[in-house]
Length: 56
Image (cartoon, rainbow, N blue to C red; front, side, top):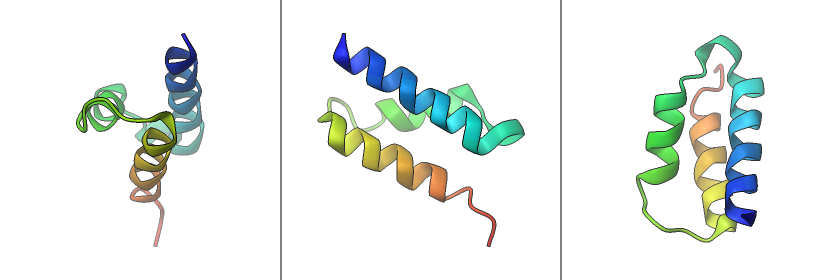
């Protein structure tokens, strides 16, 4: 249950940061691409993915 809650929090953060650029399919692809991860590592993966959308 903790993992699901963390995933939902990461999803909410992605929706807020990316606004109209948010694509749930890309989020899920990024979150699940590495397989089973510790939540700390998953946070880093999603943060890096979100940073890749940053405006230069």
